Image 1 (tube, rainbow, N blue to C red):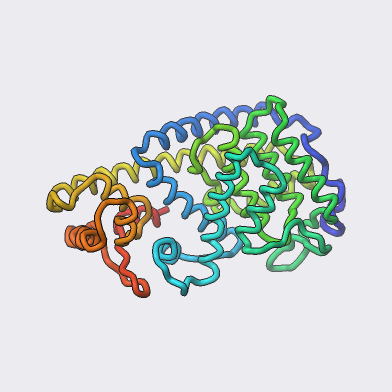
Image 2: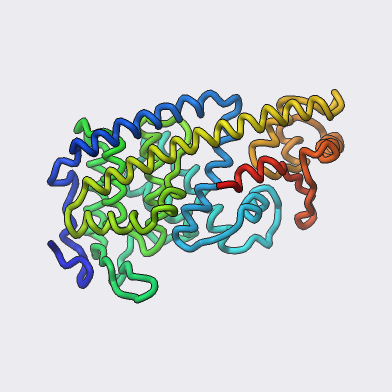
Length: 361
C-alpha cells in the first residue's frame, strides 16, 4: 500500500483495475440498477414536454452538487436568478448556475463526440469561471475540514496528470464488454483520485457521470443525478473512495455507486409521476377557471418549464403579444395558479404548487 497522505500519490494505478470488478455482488447490483435506469429512460421519454422535467431536475442537481462543496444557495434564489434580469445575484447562486451551464455545454460537446481531457477542462472552467486548466503547482491536498489532517495527496506534475487523464479516456472508450454502470463507478473513482484541478473536481466528476450515461445511450436526456444520494450518504461516499485507494476495495465502492443509480432512478421516476399529476391537475383547474381566450395547453405547459414565469417567456414562445401576455399572467394569478413577485424592475409569476413540489425532499 502506498503512502497516499504524506506524499503525492504518483503511483496511482492505471485503469483497468488489476482485479476484475465484476464480482457476483457487483453484477447483482448492476442488474437492478440497469433495470431501474431503463424504466426511467422510458418514463422520461413519455413526457409530453421533456423540458418540464429536465429544467427542474438540472437545477436541483446543480444546487445539490454545489452544496457538497459548501457552495450553498436557496431554491428561490436559483429559480429567480434563472428567470430575472437581476444583476444583484449573489456569487454562490452564480456559481450554482454555472454548474448548470457546464452540464448543458457537456451535453453539446457529446454531440461532437468529445469525452476526454479537453472536455473535463472545459467543464471545470465553466463551473469555476476561470481560464485555469490542469493544476501545475504542488501542494493541492484533501484534508479533514476540522482537524486539517491530510487525508489524501493526489498525483502531482502536469505531465503525469495529463497521462492519467489520457489513460482514463482510453478506459472509457475501450470496448471491453464491461457493464457501462460498473465502468461509470470505476471512472468516477479514478477521476476523483487524479484530482486534476485546483478546485471544481467533485462537481466536474459528477457531471461526467451523467454525460457518460448519455454517451452510452443509457439515457437520452440528462435526468439522473447522484448528488442528493451522495449528500445523504456523504460519510460512506468518502470512506469508500478512500478504501479503494488504501485497500484496492473496488467491490464495495462499485456496489455503492450502483445502489446510488438505482435509488436515484426510482426517486426520479416518482418525481416524474408527481410532476405529471400536478400538470394534469393544473390543466383541469385552468380549463375550469380561465376564460377560453386565455386557456391553452401550451401556456400551462410553459408554466411548468421552471417555477417562475414572466411576460417575455410568453412572447418568446409566440403565445401572445406583450400586453396580452401580461393580462394572461394576471388571469392565472386571479385563478390561484400563479403568484406575482417583484424582482428589480420585473414582475415574475411563481407557479406555487410546482415550486413547493420541487422544494420537497
